[in-house]
Structure formats: structure tokens, C-alpha cells
Length: 130
Length: 478
Image (cartoon, rainbow over the protein chains, first blue to last red):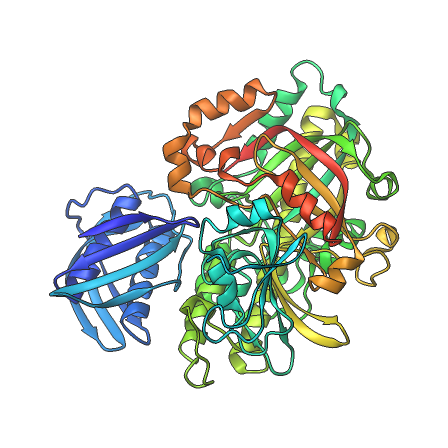
């Protein structure tokens, strides 16, 4: 489950999910919604490989990569097909659609960023500069 | 956070200890009413966090237009010791060298009779690409060489395309070029994002405004700046577009990964930083300088496009005699001499404001002080200020940069209808051209603090003096 939280500067994405992979999937859905794309399954496929120092930084890098694909190729990811999540790396395959999304996300910030166990699942939070 | 202690009528202080790890106090220029507005968000907590940066000297400072940002507050100033301090990309912000350029037209408002004002604003909107992405974001100047722009700034446009002039370069902060720029320090992704964006306005709070000079406060300074009552001006507010955002993103991540190596602990990862003399610090300064040069070239290209629009509606003489008053950054870090030492002054949403006689301002402005432009919001006034000696004594040669946001974009969208706002602005005599009603609503006057009060505080504090007030008569927004 994700929700957009009001923030004086820009927008904050908060995600609660049962697993780490679901956090990544919710981020994909949230970004697709922000870019005005319905999450119907698309035929386009991309492989994403990332490295970052920890879970929160990996989540930031994940959203940044998704936003860059939208800005540079018009590719909006809608589904995660597979995800290999390591302590400081992530390799994933996503499917999505080619469109003309508004490149709203200028940057993914590290401000008050979290991605940690919470209750029976995980809580993640990231603030986007839009 | 309400621990602010009054120092004098315009200065408040959060003492060391307000948040753990503060090395110096945090100080904000404000009166009691503005302070109450500032305390509505978390900007003072962010300012106190800035005071934890290694090597910060004197105090973490904030201008009266401070509001909550990411890590650093917008409206913040932090000077770090050049030999023992850090450089923080977040202290500059994502939009490296976001700034403003003021153009003075050789015409008075009264000369925009009939439908000329509407035609001029329409032509400006046709000729200046707007928006974050899509077609409008990538209609950059044809023939602009990115490598040379990153190295030389607007001089590359002058030498390669004949855009601008030597006089214009002299009326640009730092001559429009930070000479430590190294294009090799700018990532491929950053280049990709900026490749076709030289001469594009962007979105958010970026705008282009047609104005008339409605008040003069210091006649000698106004005369030096080439401004007179009733004159038409165009204010351009834009920055380094996607390129600058990516440079900041790249270095926040890179420095965050090296914090442990340098033994730096921070209350917020967005304050990510590295020693100035470290490889990460030096690489950032080279990349930031390149992005700053890109932004100055962007505003020079936008000025060129404004001149084309002026020429098409008002004639070639009007275009040729449209002069750049000055171009000044409000998101940048620079090594400067203050109080006998070299410091790295981070200005994030804050403007350099050097006083009369300072060697880094143009000879023509030596007696007036450096021009500073303070955009209000659509529908309110903007100000031309001039730097004053108090800025060197109290704020590392810095003053405010705008009115300062007081409502979130979401909140203002809920409160304001973009279509109604457009009609309200037009009823008050402002021709509006905006890409979207939503974007227009986000920048409604209600979203900002009172620019008159912000400017009054920096003048009372001796940081800058009012020279002229500019009233909008046309707005182009991304």
C-alpha cells in the first residue's frame, strides 16, 4: 500500500508492504500513477541493475532509475517481473508501456529517507523533488 | 521548534545544543511576525541541523524567506572553512545556479498601447519553451555545444553563435563562468538530461515576467542600473534544468557512501557532504561549476529568445536596446574571502549581495552595490535591491532570494482553482500564459509569504537596500 503525503517542499511517498519486494512493487505503482499511466500490463521490458549502500539508498536509486527511464525513453514501468535484492545491490526486470509521460520527477532526495522493518512488514518513505 | 532567542530587532538565534551535534548557533533574520510564519514548518530544525556540518564557521544563517527544503532549508547560508570544512551538494540544492536575470527594455509601459502588451506576452510564450519535459523542455538552442557551455558558460554562446555580448557577460555574476568547471566531472546521465535544454525555462516556480517599474527608492542606484519610473523590464527565473538536478543527485549519493570513511555523522542524509579537499569534494566543485556555467548560459539563451520576441512585436531597435541589468545566482557554493579567511559559502535560496566598492562587482555598479533581484509571486511586486556593507558583516555577503513559500503545492492546489486564479490575475491587469492551470495554481500569490515584509527585514538588517519595485503586467509560466 502506498500513499502520497503532503510536504511543504514537494511530495512524499510512503509505502507499507509485507515484504521488501512488495515495497519495490508499490513504488512502481505509485510512480506510474504520478505519471498518469494506468497500471495495465505492458509488453515493453527493461532490466535494471543498481548498487547502493543500503536499503533506503537502493529504494532511492530504484525510483530514480524508473523516473529516468520515463524521462529519457518514455518507458513507464507498471509491473515487477523478478527482483534479486542483495544487501547493496538490486537486479530486476520490469514490464511497462511506452507513452509520453510528463517527466515530473526532477530528483529523488535522501531527506528523511527510510526503508526498514515495521511490525509484520516494512515501512519506506522517500521525498521527491517534482 | 520555538527556542529561538531574540538577538536584536531583525535577528533570532537557536543556541548550540538546540539539536545534538551543533557546532555553531543557527540564526535567522526575521521579525516576530515572520518568525511565527517560519515556525509553521520544520525549516528551523533543518537550519539547526546545518549547524552540525564539520568546519562550519560563525553560524548557520537563514534569510527571512526561509522555508522547509530537503536537508538544508531554502533560504539558508552556510560558510565552511576552506581547509578544514566540508562541501555539501544539498547546501546548493538540486537546481544548481537557479537564479534571476533582469532585462531593461528601452520602452515605457505607456508605449504598450492597444493590443501590444497581449501580443508581446503571447510572443514571449511562443518563443520561450516551457515545461519540465516533453517538447517544450527539449527545444534548446540549435548548435549549442554542451562541452563548451559547461566549460565557458554564456561565453560559448557568444563565441559560437553570436548570442549575447561582452557587456552582458560583464553584467553576469562571476562573468557567467566559474573557471574551475570540468565537464569530465559531469556524468553521462546529467549530460543526457541537459543536452537539449539550453534556452528552456522549465516548470515549478520558474517563470518569465513582463513588468513595469512602479517605484524608485534610490535614484542614483536606479540610474546606474539603467532603471527609471514606468520603464518595462523582463525578469527571467530559471536554472540548470535536468543537468543540475542530476549533478546534485549523483554527488549526494557518492558522498553519502563515503561519510563513514571520513568519520562524518549527520542528522539527515540529505546533508551528505565531504571534505572540500577530498576527491569527492573537489569533483563536486568541478561538476557544480560546470552546471552553474550551464545555468548562466541557459538564462543568456532565454534573454536572446526574449529579445527575439521583443523584436517581433516592438521592432528591432527595441530588441537591440534591451539590456541585461544583471544576472545573479541564488543556488551556488563559492570560495570567498570573509573576515580575513577563505570560506566556502553555500547559498541555497539566498543571493550574493556584495556592497559598493567590492572588487567582484562590475565597475559601473561600484558606487551602487551589486544588484539583487527578489521575485515576489505572480500578482505581487518584485524588488531590485543593492548589496550593502551589513551583508559582509552579518551574512557572508548574502541576502534573501524571494518571498518564501508558506503553503505546500498540494495544499495550494486544494485551495486555489487555476482557472479562477488566471481570471483574477487578468482582472488585475496581468496577462497570463501558463502551460497548465495546475501549475499556475501551485504558484498562486497565497502560497507565498509577504515579499514586502521580507525585503523590509533585509533592509533593516543592513544586508541590502531597496532600489526599485517592479509590478507584473504579464507572466509566462511552465
